[in-house]
Image (cartoon, rainbow, N blue to C red; front, side, top):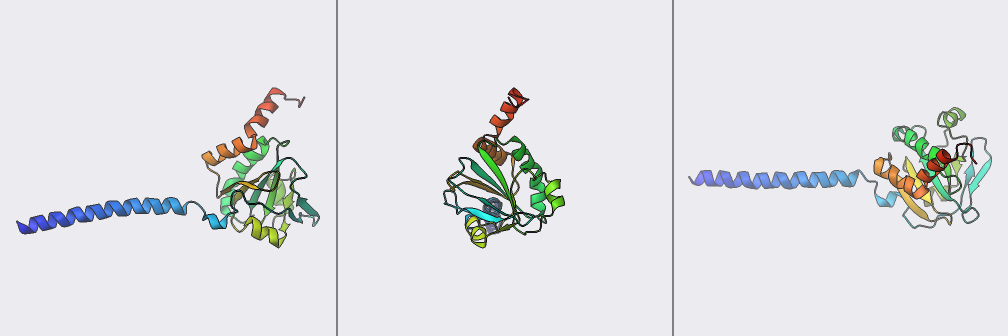
Length: 193
């Protein structure tokens, strides 16, 4: 009889420990799904102007304060499989942007994108940085890909999305960039009047 109570007590303790471990495992998985904040540029951080070179080796730059538009940085690597997953989502964002409010800019962190890659991903209508100044690489924390970074017109980080964009991120991005407004304006005025 004593052994039955002892075994029952041990079973209850083991069950409670398993439940606690399952809960802890779920919590740890959710923490791992988000990039550590120290690896992303912090929201509200003032960023320096972005300067570098395009595919032809010509100098290009993003100078904050001279243009009233926000800047949407698409940070990628041509060899990143997660970037491959993100391209259809980025294309959706790019095509629906209100270009009078937001200017898209692509940044290749590996400096290895080719003309074919640029054409394949329909990036001809925006600046594409193939080489960025080292100081900007550090300040913007471009070591993670893919990243989608929204910078206000004064150079402050408004929001950073690291990894493949999910539906809530896409909705927030559309709201912050006025993407829905641009799409409805095109529908209302198909000839651009």
